[in-house]
Length: 476
Image (tube, rainbow, N blue to C red; front, side, top):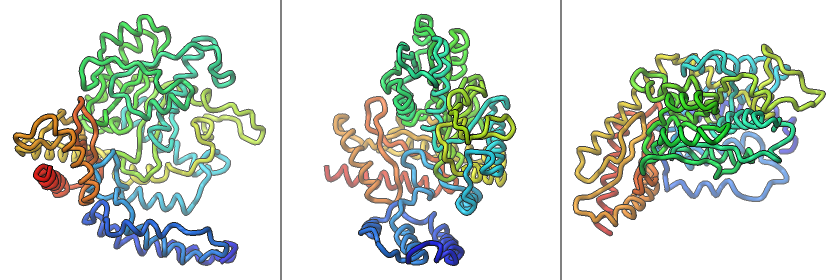
């Protein structure tokens, strides 16, 4: 087909093709299996040699729609309980299309005042939503991992400053190892952030009081008394059992010992939206930095995260001051967000967040949080009422940790049986729920965060688990 300039008239038609395909796909989504094995072979149609002469816009988009609508994992549907993956609300999904249509360079105010202003607005709205002080600095990121990296980069700069070093300019050479403390709930995304910051993935010292990983507050108090300047990682939501660190107590200790408190609130920060769950994150407003995801419980498309820092100037110190003559100087009103986070090239990811908050407001998002907790509790009741299922952890928000345990099955066989069950769920495709290891036991841990999920989907999950478990147990 050659130069895209010669096909510019195809742009509107290609977008129209996507729009026309969207209606039937979205209508079918609540009823589709999460993965349809009969269409798995279609992914191979993506392969082949790089064409010298292209097929043209219309042919390429038609082929992608043919393959994608059939072979995609329907993770945006109501029965994907694996990992912690939300869907995209109608407003957020449409706004993401607008984001691609407008194709804004969102890092610099002069490049797009629209994108920069949208980011400023949604960050203010998010602080209001979570009960964080308006004075906090903030920036949108690609994910909670990037948000953790952002908050911990500010912590690293603060810590190095306590040793008289500007780590942004001079690096870590000559500095001691930065003390980092957490509970056993610390997530790999925080460890990855520490790894990328040159601090070491294994620098974290976990202080626990039981085999679930709960924080030993007294041990943390003693460790901080002799550690010197240190960083604490509080976890607002643990991915296996769904528990929360005692953030209020951690904030007390951070204040008493002069430590930096970073909170990984990837999904748990949204507990602040409801009076029923807000106590789980009490104290987060006193943290020095907070990270969270948008593509989990906010239900906006990938990629979306946000970082908040109590000292708003810390972001600029950690990520700005590039000394590039073509870049504008930092400004408090006309903000250049690429000076405040790890990315320079940034899409306008504020648009879907703006749209979903504008469309459904505080009340709508609170209702979603409460509905998901209700659905988790419903699944918990199905489990406790079933003779072959065992609930392993209390239900706090939306994660339900349990295992298949048929009557009379020897304890030593259960890990293998549940691991096979997790694989069978993925292969079956009607619902998705993966396995984990909780307190030394292989378990299922479905996460209920999709706005489309209903009681019918929860009941199907329980039924499929029991059906597949019974079949596996009989053949083992």
